[in-house]
Image (cartoon, rainbow, N blue to C red; front, top):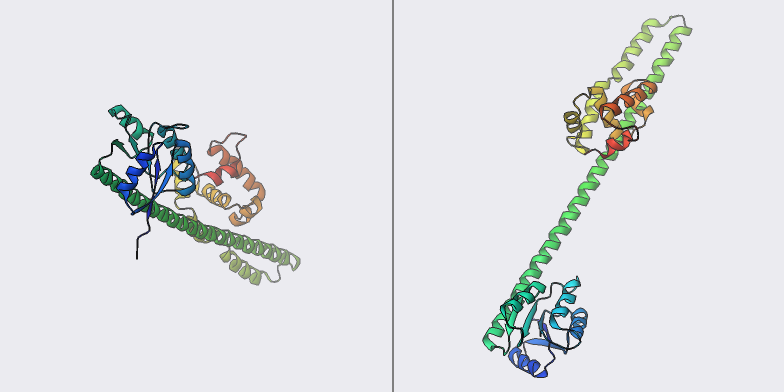
Amino acid sequence: MNREKKTILVVDDEPVNLELILDLLGTEFEVLYASNGERGVQLTTEKLPDLVIMDWEMPVMNGIDAILKIKENPDTADIPIIVATGIMTESNDLKTALDMGAVDFLAKPLNPIEFKARLNSALSLSASYQQIKKQKQEIEAFAEQEKKLLEENIEAKARELTSAAIFDYQKNELLAKLMNELSRLDSVTNQMYAPEIKKISREIKSYLDLEKSWTNFKLHFDEVNPGYLERLAAKYTSLTHNELKVCAYLKIGLNNKEIALLANIESASVRRALTRLKKKLELTVDEDLRDFILGYK
């Protein structure tokens, strides 16, 4: 299978220079031609050649300005450019060309051996760079996909965590209602069934094991927000165990009523706890506690 020909754009206002370069290139390359820098920029944008050989002094637009235009365009910025000139051949000219983005500099008249060596070197380096760039893009795409999967996994765990907290909230709400109903029943029956009611009440209270619920909750919370509570506690050392619990509940977006039931306290107590928490976190009057907790890393 024949290799696909590389495309080389020659930008030079002297046809004799094109003829010389064509002779040096032979039939190995596909050659495009532009007689000034402006046309060279246009052809580079349209054809995306593998290499540009750019003269310096030309009408309409000189080679240096053309290089700048090519390098400004993200689609053409990586195309290697060799400056070939018979006039601007001083060392400071070489520096100018390289500073503008050329990869090499050749003085005219061209030396056939040097020309071919520099040409092949530029093409080889460009191919290596493109390969590295492609691999980098593949790695970035893989990393982005991995990040997306991780975020989806975290989001799924966060939803699971919130669902578990809501389940605990609903369970505690139901058990609290049952306790109230038992208390009412004990009263209206003049404690006729007091032993049985006490037994049932003890069983219900065993399900209201808040510390066990918290331990299970924190296990899942730490999977979604690793080290969050520890960092918070390390920075704000006056926070109590219960206040850290409230921070965790706020982090997953629970409202005051849900927090009250999970902590088995009154809603008014939650409001007071949030006020104390805001002071301990050194927030101003205008700063929102929930926004702070959600944004804290």
